[in-house]
Length: 113
Image 1: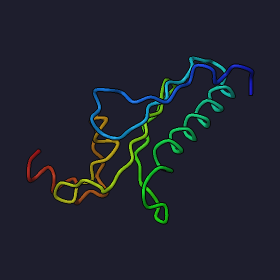
Image 2: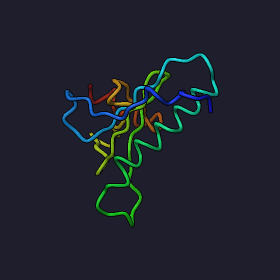
Image 3: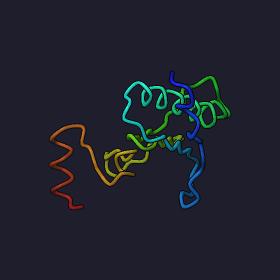
């Protein structure tokens, strides 16, 4: 790891989000190995600060992870939200919807948006 490659990464909460989450802002870099180290460090910090603190450590904790070259956002889930079998998780947060199969897509299109 290059010296100072993690210096500007911080795990914060973004005030407009009124749900449990952690946001890690990554340092700008063109060096893929530095970016890899940053993402690894940020993921581990987010996981430790959000998931390890959950009450029931005997069960796996589900979470959504959204990331790009600028940030990682982790959001723990208590339960999966659904609307008529349609799962809404991180992709819903980002304004997208994924369908498990063509039948569910057809059902969604036939019943309306």
